[in-house]
Figure 1 (cartoon, helix red, strand yellow):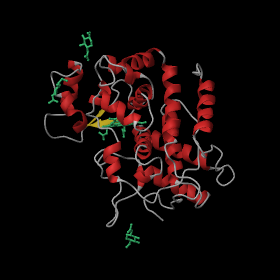
Figure 2 (cartoon, helix red, strand yellow):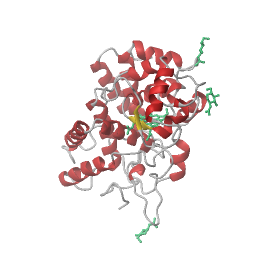
Figure 3 (tube, protein in one colour):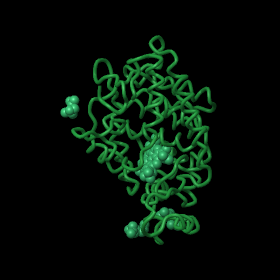
Figure 4 (cartoon, helix red, strand yellow):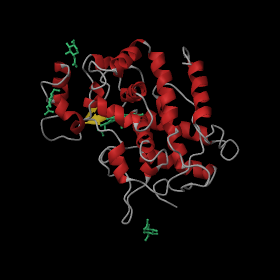
Length: 319
Ligand code: HEM
Ligand SMILES: *[C@@H]1O[C@H](CO)[C@@H](O)[C@H](O)[C@H]1NC(C)=O
Ligand SMILES: *[C@@H]1O[C@H](CO)[C@@H](O)[C@H](O)[C@H]1NC(C)=O
Ligand SMILES: *[C@@H]1O[C@H](CO)[C@@H](O)[C@H](O)[C@H]1NC(C)=O
């Protein structure tokens, strides 16, 4: 049976049902007695950070994705490299790209002051991603809690399991199906690119390739900020229409051949994904409810629970 959501309440109820049904031992009330202020601390710090710089909301959402797709949502992405430990921060998809670590650190400091040694960094990251989407006008969902933090990280899995922006649709489909997501969920989750920015090095080939599927005026405007060589770190919005608003404009860009990354445009190429893109243009509420449900599913990817892992006291270091 396919539940149909036509209003925000239904979205919330459905997402919460999903959280209860599919999260194993995670529970929304996990810290209700041990850290009752947790949700309000995370929410107010995220709102503050997003007010200061809207892009931080995008960066925190992406951090959670890059955590969950690599050995599950275990905060492995937050571990710093040391002389005898190589984490995930220098893997290709993450290096010179991931941001938001300082915001997680300051949330963790406040949470430790309110309730020492009980709340995991992985749970903080999951809440921060949800609160970021809400702060930018997107849907809400109920976050199951009780994840624990890893004592390991995997540089190789970060390189292998995170999708490259140069992939075509079949490879995007398999990268997501490896984590249990179907094509529709791939399209819904890619809708994250309605917020935030990407570096020139990620879209240069596309902006300079005259034969690829790209709107010529859009390509010309990208080239002014992204020359054939150099300026690798120059930024362009992933959604040129409304980069600070979580809406469905990303999909409208795709049908106009104005996707920024090759992997964005690959979702609308006379293929099995087109109908999902079109449907999220005419049914923005369906995009919100599918996105919320897919985020719940992503945030439930193999968490450490029970006595596995640890509660890190510093999110950047193993205890
Ligand atoms: C479908 C496969 C995906 C690919 C190939 C991809 C690739 C990328 C790339 C290359 C960037 C720009 C990074 C940079 O230039 O520094 C980016 C940014 C971003 N991605 Fe994705 N991504 C994908 C899916 C997702 C998913 C599933 C999410 C979240 C659930 C997500 C959230 C974001 C956000 C919010 C940004 C902007 C970050 C910021 O401004 O700091 N992406 N992505
Ligand atoms: C790395 O070195 C530190 C300090 O010398 C030590 O405490 C730690 O156990 C080492 N970690 C690993 C993973 O070997
Ligand atoms: C340019 O785009 C065409 C058509 O999509 C593709 O076949 C070709 O490989 C691309 N060239 C480069 C340098 O990526
Ligand atoms: C999709 O098909 C139409 C009609 O056959 C064609 O004009 C268009 O170039 C195709 N687009 C892509 C991205 O292949």
